[in-house]
Structure formats: C-alpha cells, structure tokens
Length: 68
Image (tube, rainbow, N blue to C red; front, side, top):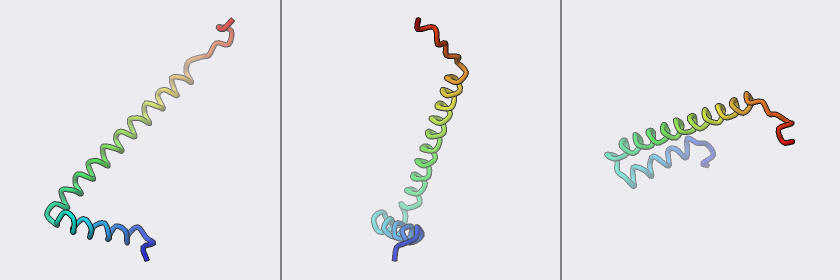
C-alpha cells in the first residue's frame, strides 16, 4: 500500500497540515529547505578539506631513511 515515496510524502504533508495548520506549513518547508542547504554546504566544505589534505599528503615525499 505504501510502497512508493510519493505515498509517504502525501502522508507527511497531511500530517503536517493536521499538526501545524496550513498557515505554518510554508514557513516550516522554508526552514527545512534552508537546513538541507546548510547541510549540503557543510558536507561540500568537509569534502574539500579532505581532498586538500589528501593532495597535501600525496605531494609530500616520504623519506624512508630518516628513521635511522
């Protein structure tokens, strides 16, 4: 019965209207959109930092006789 994401989305919208009312629903959707955007921006920043660290580690030559 609830096999697709569309079914769950409809249920979520109906539940949102019942709990918050139709006047607050656009405000909640806006807040959710901003939160998702901030999450994506943070994830991209972390990925960039990891790539920079990997490039830095790959560019640094490792000396094998420095331990002796």
